[in-house]
Amino acid sequence: MKAARRIPLLKKMLSQLGIEDERVRLEWVSASEGDRFATIVDGMTEQLRQLGPFCHNGGGENG
Amino acid sequence: MAKPKVALYWAGACGGCDVAVLDTNEKILDIAAIADIVFWPIALDFKYHHVEAMEDKSVDLCLFNGAIRTSEHEKIARLLRAKSKVMVAFGACSCFGGIPALANFTNRAEILERVYKEAPSNANDNGTFPQTHTKVDEGELELPEFFDTVLTLAQVVDVEYFVPGCPPPVDLILKVVDAFATGQLPPVGSVIASDKTLCDECERVKEEKKITKIYRPHEIIPDPEKCLLEQGIICCGPATRGGCGLRCIKANMPCRGCFGPPPGVADQGAKLVSAIASIYQGNSAEEIAKMVNEVVDPAGTFYRFGLADSMLKRKRIEQAEKGG
Image (cartoon, rainbow over all chains, first blue to last red; front, side):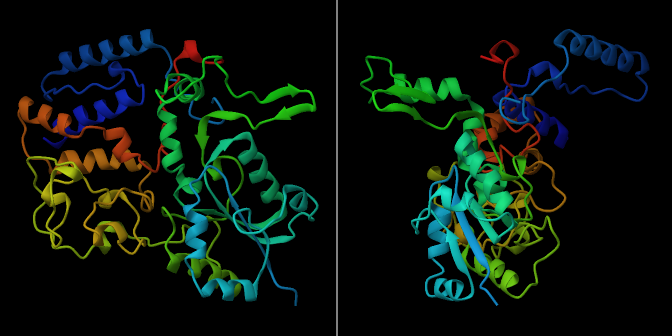
């Protein structure tokens, strides 16, 4: 259950750092829910594709 | 044998690291006895052109404090690197960005706008902003460029050793000078502090880390004997390197993380998110929301000294802003 507390706090911190909320997601999937797992991964992949590559501009002057 | 040559410099810093060197008190005379100080802006009247005139690698030890905030800091970092055999990132700002790197939550344009235009104490009706080059009757004046992103020293030049702390405590400063004087410097890349976490060194009574409310330091007078985390105060001890002499803890204040991450921890902030969320009790949506709410400023608290050195290094720059 630690993950249930860690992820919301991490998301708050990442939002302060300008990271889009959609890039981190927590879902609970049972080992018997293969279809659901695949659907969630597909959905996440599609969402990330729409967001585009992650670019944090962290390196060097203006990165 | 000629005395070894030592240079000290301050870049984006408050001056506290230089004061810490002076805090060695009578030991500073020992340092002066074994070494020639060839450059030290806070204390001695050497100019940049004196350093430029030195031969490459003619300075034996350079203690460089402060983050890289402007083009001047970068230029002098490169200059001192070329002239020095051993480069030491001295203090939290030089090692991890320190307090100045909290500016990586914003950017140059926002900072200049705030400081020169919006701040209520300003009287700047002409909208004067600092320029890197200004023509006046006598010629052209030049100011260093203010960077968008605060950098650590090691992000600009190669660094042999890291001495963390805000400021580094006197015993660590003497340890560096001693190691240098006796030729017993550790392997290149070493952080000259403890290899344990602050929690490992903390003498407070630790029982069970389970909390149901987080207090900000001004909201509670902590028990001076008990673990601060167990009292609900965010203490960065679990994810901070020890060796500081527990200065804050002994003053009944929580660790703020100025010694950076301990060995094996890549990202101090992420580790602290994990630690704080782990000890908070409650699994319902309401309880979790309460915890998230009580950690008022997670990024600023967990990366207080380490943002420039963290995995993300700064707040993401929107693509549209880039190049602007």
